[in-house]
Image (cartoon, rainbow, N blue to C red; front, top):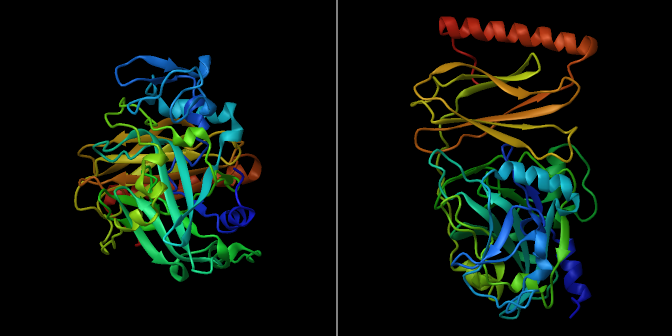
Length: 416
C-alpha cells in the first residue's frame, strides 16, 4: 500500500528538527545500524542464535511472524551486541555506513476522526550515565506526535514522549525553526515556521520542548546547542509499514544491566495515539544543580582540563568532557569521564590529542553528589598554526598563569 500523497506531504511539511545537548555522542540514525553492526546477533531468550549480520541479519530479515530464513518469530527474541565498547562500535559503524546517519521515521495514524503525525527516532545506545550509570541500555526508540486540527490543515497540539510520561503543548506554544533562526539573526525560509524543534535529553534522548533542566521520572538536561551536520532524513513508513517495524522483539540485550527497548509496534500509541496523552504531565519548575567553574585548554596538542568546584555545595562525582571536530565529519563526538573524589580544584592533563591543524569544540560538565548533571561549558579551538597559532598559544599560557595565581591565592572569579 502506498502512502496517501497528502499524508506524506504533511509529514514532510511538519518534520521536526532535532537539537542535541553539547555532550551528546549518539544521534538519531537508521535502525539498520542495529542489524548491520558486526558484533550484534539476533537470539532467542534462551540463548539460541538465530542470525548475525554475517549470515543474513538485516532489517529485511525481520518480520512479524517468520524471519528471512523461515524461523518463527518469538516475542522474547532480541538483538544484542556481543561487545561492550559501544563508542568504538558506533564510530566504526558510522564510518562504514554514512547512509545510516541522521534518519527519522514518519507515519500517520487516525484516531477519533483526527489525524496524528508520528515521528520515531532510533538511537544506537541510551547513554544515560549519571554517577550510578542508571538505565543505560542498548538501542533506544523515542518519538513525538502532532495532532492535526479537525480540518487537517495543521497541528493543534504536540506530544513529546519522555520515559514513562509525555509532555503536551498547544501548537502555538511549540518552538519552531523560524524562531531559532530569527534569534540567531538569520532569515527564516519558507516552511520554517511549520517545523517544530525537539530538544533531545543528554544521553536519555527523551524529547523536550525547550532546553534546560527537566525533572522527569529520572533526571534530564539538554542545552540544544548541537545540531546534526546535515538535516535529518525523513523516511516515510506510512500506510502498511515495512515488516521490520512489526517485529515484536527487543532492540537491545542486557549487557549494560538494563534490557533493550520494545519495538515501536509494541507501544500503545502505535495504534492508539491518544493513549500517550493519558501519561501527560506538567514538569514542576525546579532549579538546576550548582555549576562549577570549568576550563578547557590545548597544551602541547593535548587537552588540558581545569576545574574549580568551590561554587558547589558538595564535590561532584564525575567530570565529563566531550570532544568533537568539525573537520572529522565521519566521526561522532567522543565522551570521556573522570572520577575526581575529594578534589576541590586543580587541573588534569589528558592524553586526548587535539590536532593543531583542526577545529575542535569541547564541552565540559559534571555530575553532582546527587547524580544530577550540570549544563555544559563549551570551548572552541581553531587551528593552532602560524602567527594566529602563536598568539593563541601565548594567550592560553597567560590565561593559565592567571588561573594558577587565582587558585593559589583563592581569589574569586567574576560571576558568569
